Length: 92
Image (cartoon, rainbow, N blue to C red; front, side):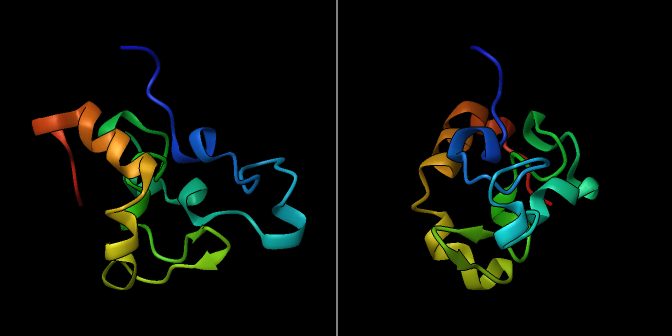
């Protein structure tokens, strides 16, 4: 398997450090979610983004884990992480 991508590398929303959408939309909270660093092999919240509150996926603020759970379970990036990690998948 190649390099494990973080959500901002996969989705290319432009809300990462020096991203082209940061000025307009702000920095995505997964970037600064240091408490999740290393989960599923990612940087900060980059490979556990479905558990980070306030993400801005698809142009809509997603809110808490409970509020965004159904949309995250359909997300192509989340499915990729679930598939790559299999039984090793880490949650909180």
